[in-house]
Image (cartoon, rainbow, N blue to C red; front, side):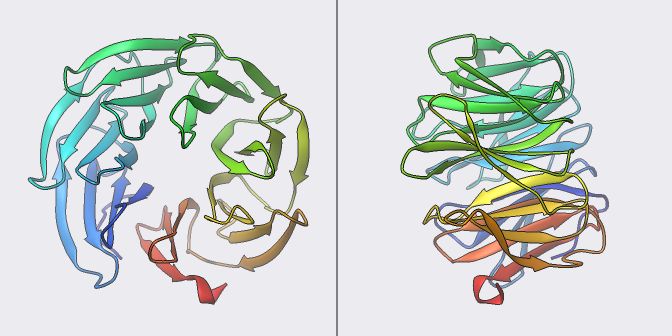
Length: 291
């Protein structure tokens, strides 16, 4: 799927319909039907790069964040911006909805993570702990904990109630670009970095379980299969890779998945497809039988 005029930064699936949202350095968000390939709507309003998009668990709302220092919340039925959230002092790099709630989290280059009440537009809490740019975050399924990664090479685990991290995971040698959760008999954390590695950590005590090596450039994004047996990673090496978490090894690699850096990858458990986005301006949908 084409249409963006600049690099595609991030993608998000609708929880029910065959809809995918993509964000771009061109300042827009594009909504497409990935089964038909049909373009539905462009959401415009940001004055800079849109770094990330997230769709809430009801499928009614989309959140976007930008280098213009704002977060916008959009009504996906009306395709209108219903709330603009101000408060970050630098580039806003990631945004995620809390499950089944009126709140979202945002991560920023101002070194903070903020919790927002969507209905009021107010910042309810600021989480501080990172010493540099907070690049990414992920909320667990229960909505009571989240993990973040940053330019300080740290992965941090937080409870929603506390303003300070409960665990700090050190071991990466460069910027942490992506984080996720996976359940391997117990809750684990996955992180991907510009140091080309993917690390799997014990989510309870912060111990490193495994270091997955194979990518030849920055690891940009990681998505988890719904069975928790596989993860998908993408990289500036233009590949998408599949990793077996029972054997902790790479089992599949798609070379030249895109013609430029692959910025995002996401698994859809309902339609059993994988989507990827790239600096080459495109979004691709992959049938999992291709893997």
